[in-house]
Image 1 (cartoon, rainbow, N blue to C red):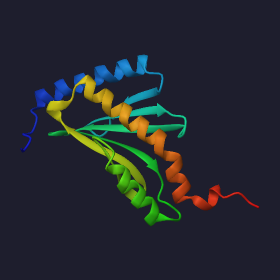
Image 2: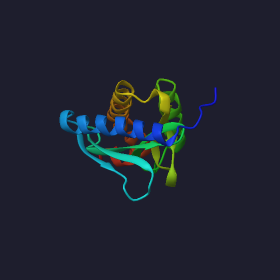
Image 3: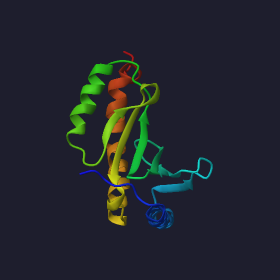
Length: 157
């Protein structure tokens, strides 16, 4: 089924829903460190700075488009070694994810990316997205580093 483009009014309503949710996250969610709206591009984009443990800080980008809400987070730079093993690991992990997937982005960096139809954007879905991306970065960041940067983790004898 092809998703029809949202009208400007619908996009304004969805933006307001996202803004309200983000304000509550900033006030109530201890892992949300900061929220910024992209005021320079003219696009409907938000940057959510998240505090983690395995990965100290990361940013989740939300980008409201005509048909979908796109979201992504940078996970790690391109692997220095064992690239094939890391990519195989990520492809296997992708089968366990719902609503996002590991992907190779600019400069071969690793990202988590996903999108949902604009008609599905509500607080429960936004909570699921934020929670899922947080969980997956926290769970798999260190194992990914140990594969892609293995020599940095080897102990000298």
